Length: 152
Image (cartoon, rainbow, N blue to C red; front, side, top):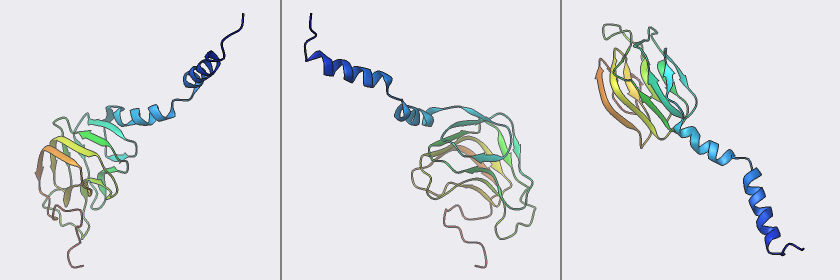
């Protein structure tokens, strides 16, 4: 008995679909990974959902507590606080920042917590970012992505 010629292309197409690598699906799922736990100040380099599991304290006079270098990142402060060196500290022209993302990052969301004691509290630097449910205290720099240090 011969297999009809019509079935051969269908069987080959189904085999290709079943055996093909799923790289495209995995890249899409990367946006939905997590939540990853944040236990200390760090750089976030992968898309996904992140959640603080304790208060964070940043003691430097320059730099950033949380630096976001990926797009499509959600940070849930989960009611915790990110604290900088404090408003009494005389900051240099580019004092510390609580959370920063580069201008070319999109899909950034920061939610539900407190940020205090930084020169710049939150600087997401791109359109389409979301900041909601944050209590922010002590920032002395303008809340813009185009901030220029004083005296420049």
